[in-house]
Image (cartoon, rainbow, N blue to C red):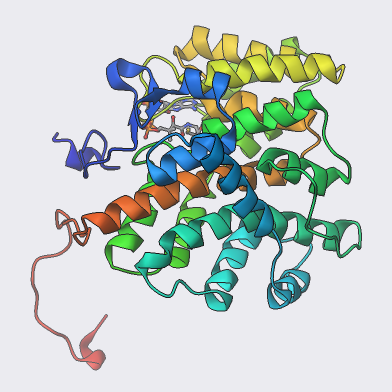
Amino acid sequence: MNQINRGGLEGIVAGQTSLCTVGVDGVGLTYLGYTIEDLSEHACFEETAYLLLYKKLPNAIELESFRERLCKQRDIPVPLKIVLEQLPKQSHPMDVLRTGCSVLGCLEPEAGFAEQYQAAERMLACMPSVLVYWYHFHNSGQRIEVETKSDSIAGHFLELLHGHPPSELNQRAMDVSLILYAEHEFNASTFTARIVASTLSDFHSAITAGIGALRGPLHGGANEAAMELIDRFQDPDAAEASLVEMLARKEKIMGFGHRVYKKCDPRSDIIQVWSKRLCEACGDQRLYPVSERIEQVMRREKRMFPNLDFYSASAYRCLGIPTAMFTPLFVLSRISGWAAHIFEQRADNRLIRPSADYIGPEQRNWKPIDQRG
Ligand code: COA
């Protein structure tokens, strides 16, 4: 069986990128040559986003100016607020972000590709506001101000959500999580965004499509599904017993496995440390031990390792984030990676249009309607 017939484009090199390496030798992740370990240890999310958009680490003046531009663009237009108010309370927040992004494309269309950097910065700056404005309107009945004093997206988001500035620990945990989610080569949503960009469509259409692809549980939606799994168990023994049964029924365990990494997901080790710290800080005795036992069972029974989404779930819970907002947080970060790929696609564009092996019926004669069975 050749690679194409196995489906899913597994192992197929579908283009070139200078942005990211994933799983070279089965492990490892780099953004423009910097390892994810260095970035999550030393960088803030804004530095990481700048690196992806402008292909260099910012100096102090560039970083300050980038932060200022992002802070100034957090507000959202009134017609967008009205749309958010009209959406049902039961909407999935991913649908809200997808809609918000699309509405922004109507209200503030990209006038030409020369404006792509402004479009990307605007979107990074205001999508947290879209998400949290909708959330508070429908859940606490408030039309919140979408401005805070925080100069970071992590701090701004947590303050908008909770109504007070986060602790230093919580802010840094969120910042690291955003760094880890920022970029990941030709994953399904990024490839989707590149396909849309390759038709010479606009920035907002490409990002809207990316959000749609990210929503599914085989991709970004796995962090929510992992949380739902962990929440089923009161203690590690109950988790182990149930996991063994699930695996016997050949069920997929969300938050495990990866198409490209073969030995480990380097992002998981990083977020796991933060999950442990956050669980200790908030005094939770269940989430981390249950998660750890699920990991042990998966390693023992399936030789499978957790991906980024698994320990992100317990970390986000400790940060007080509603489960349905887990994947939307991924969006708030990945906008940086998607934007960088859209720029890269546009800089050397060729329409992405693969072929398929035909497996349908042979050519046949047309039948008038009264002769059909
Ligand atoms: N739990 C249990 N078994 C799993 C599994 C999981 N999370 N992921 C893969 N497997 C098994 C499959 O059942 C399959 O077994 P089989 O050969 O006996 O049928 C085998 O491993 C290959 O899986 P497949 O789904 O074909 O691999 P893929 O490369 O297409 O899938 C993922 C990659 C990420 C989609 C897959 O591992 C998955 O669905 N994981 C859960 C969702 C998730 O966490 N997504 C986030 C990714 S960052």
